[in-house]
Image 1: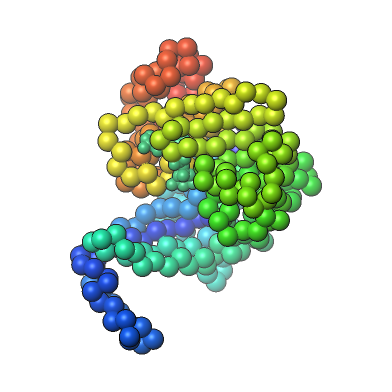
Image 2: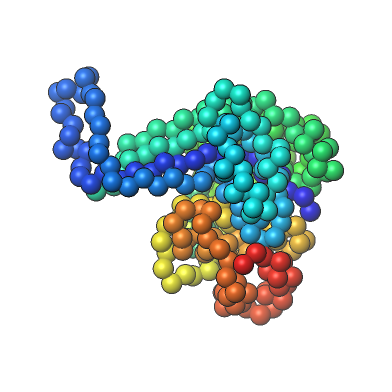
Length: 327
Ligand SMILES: Nc1ncnc2c1ncn2[C@@H]1O[C@H](COP(=O)(O)OP(=O)(O)OP(=O)(O)O)[C@@H](O)[C@H]1O
Ligand SMILES: [Mg+2]
């Protein structure tokens, strides 16, 4: 099964300031604000939703297509993704703009000053899926993850009009999108992913009830943090799946992306909703244990970890897939 993942491609520059921002702010001088903080740490992390999902799919032995827009500065990042099994040829390179960048400084009390430069990501709206699908010799499912909003709408429209199966993953973009835009992004999706909070927001903003949503998408997946995930289909009982517990949760950033990758990998094996979600939980557990979303590596305990959480019968169903995972 060929999977294409559309979404943001970005780098994160994360700095730490030893002190408190609040001690440098002079309230009655805010109109003349000009501050510079001497920071001790700089961490540059590979990010963006689409590469995050692709990286985990690559780790599971799949060769996903990465579809998005980046700048000329993408070459090192491209090499990294190529080495991890991701097909990066569909990435559009902007002639004028840098890759999207999140720059944030956090102080001792976790106050944060941050900026997000969208840059080359804006050009994702110029990407047409059809030539990519043709060059790839066909794509079975296209994921539409957070990205330039125009691009998300265009990709979804194109999938609907050309009859490509698509996964709606509007996630954090839901927060500011209108009900009308959200309706356009999810109507007709084969799968709709969101976390619990976003699930409520979708219903509130679109005015569609949970049942109405199930009439418009084939499968609705809701991730619920430490409570696991639930999978819903019209006329069927919901399926609940637990998390895979880890000894030490280090950083949860990107668990949602990891879950989606595990789930899609299960789909590519033709597995049930339950097994797909269990694979999602498995991949999330590796991400939660490491700082960053593309820094984990599967180890030899992968099958045991799955079995301990979900049992021998479940393991038998996914063993073929886990055998092909990259350790
Ligand atoms: N502490 C944890 N330990 C193990 N697995 C976890 C933990 N938190 C979340 N997960 C797994 O990750 C999945 C996604 O988590 P969650 O619902 O928090 O996503 P999210 O809010 O979209 O996260 P983010 O957007 O920060 O990536 C959960 O369904 C669960 O399987
Ligand atoms: Mg999320």
